[in-house]
Amino acid sequence: MDHETLKTAAQVAERACDRARAEIMPRFRDVAVEWKQDGSPVTEADRAAERIIRQTLRESYPDHGLLGEEYGDAEAGPEDAPRWIIDPIDGTISFSRGIPLFGTLLALTVEGQPVVGVIDLPALGERYVATRGGGCRRNGQPVFCSKSADLHRSIVSTGDPICFELAGRRPLFERITREVPLVRGYTDAFGHAQTISGGIDAMVDCDLNPWDAAATQLLAIEAGGACETRTGARGKIDLFFGSPALVEQLVEMS
Image 1: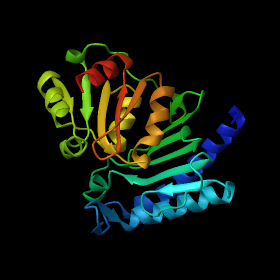
Image 2: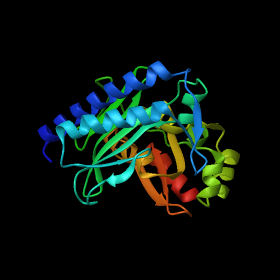
Image 3: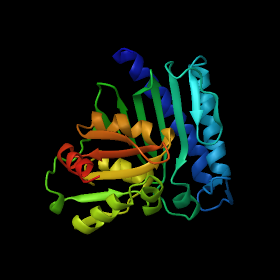
Image 4: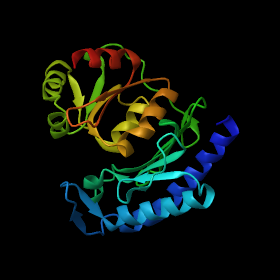
């Protein structure tokens, strides 16, 4: 896809996120929580947001595949064809508890590689958008990953300890928390966004699904950082991203 095609796709993605915000925010701190078979929480806000995102994408791209957390892969199409990957609310635990550190993740992939990525943080009024080769912006302004090279002077964020356990990387979590002085548990879309924009120097997030990872895999690179993808014990995605020098060190620690 050329630059103009990607720019148009990013605009459509932003429109989808605008509509998702209109479904999410009226329900924030006023929604019932259910539990899915895998033990993860879900709310009507998750479902309503994904429905409107799918509708918006279908209006502009009826031939593109759609893969989402709440409504699955029935419309995913061939893996090598254009496909939108949707997480309507990443951080549903935070959302359901009234904590404003949640977001919408949306990515367009072509031949399995992300070419458009969006992290939208509706409760904070922040949106991060990247296109392949076009850089990364927060609310229209360029943002960049950290360039820190010293783990002892850096903030490193991790996903939940249970995710390291499920990914077979518990020793890595223990080593990070033992050897890195400033470890913060900024999880989910919020942690990803802060790492992409350099507030957090690097992050390790394990046992992810495609909708948890696809946007960040592009955003981190377009923000001048590194993003290393590994496969965990359950066949899910483990991400190491942020400062290139720190990512290299964290991968070596694993």
